[in-house]
Length: 112
Length: 113
Image 1 (cartoon, each protein chain N blue to C red):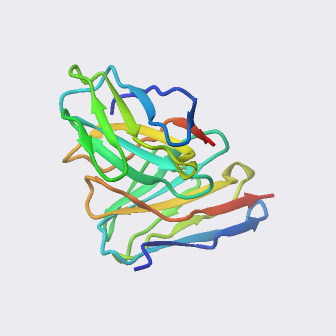
Image 2: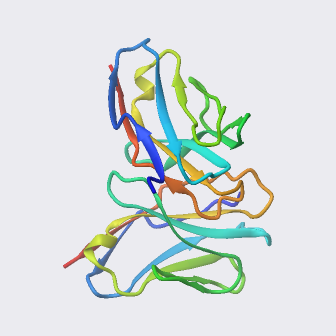
Image 3: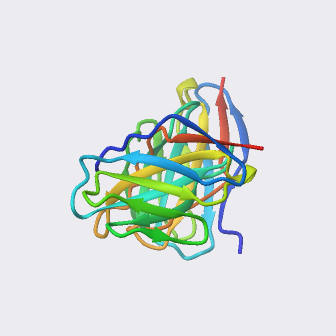
C-alpha cells in the first residue's frame, strides 16, 4: 500500500470549510484513497473514499488531483464536534486482505 | 443494533498475567480485526480474520493470539502481559475483506504494571 503524508495539525474556525490535505505520490492505479477520523478516545469512524473522481457524501467531500498524487478532504461547515484526528489511507480494493494501515494523521482543531 | 462491542473498557494487569479482550459484533460481518494505539501514534494492526476459522497476522502480532470460532466473536489473548503492551485496543469489523467501511468498537484501555 502507498505511503501517505499529512500535516500533523491544522486549525479551522467554526462554520468555515476545513480543507485537509494528503500527499500520496506513490499511489498506484488501482489504489483507493480512504479517510477516517478519530474523535478523542473513541474508535475511528469512516468518512469517505474514492479512486479517481471527486466524491461527496453527507459528511464530507473528497477531491483527488488528476494525477492522483494528492487529495483533499473538505468539511464544508466545520463544527466544534469535528475536532478530531483525521487519517488518510491508501489501499487496494478489491481483492486484498482488508488491512487498514493508519499513519499519524492530522489533528484538526475547530475553534469558536 | 449494538454494532461492535468490546469488553472490558478498562483493565489493569500485572506483568506475566494473562487475559482475553473480548470483541463481538452483531452485524454478521465476515471481516474482523484488532488494532492497538499508543500515545501520539496511529493505529497499528495486530491480527485480522477474513471469516470464521481464518486468522492472520498484522503489523505487530508478537505477544498476542487470536481465534475466530464464530462469525460474531474475535477475542484477543495476551498470554503473558508485558508493560510494552500497555495501550488502547480497538476491534473493528467490516462486511467483507475489502473493508470499504470498517466499524470500530469503543476501545479497551489496558495498563500492564
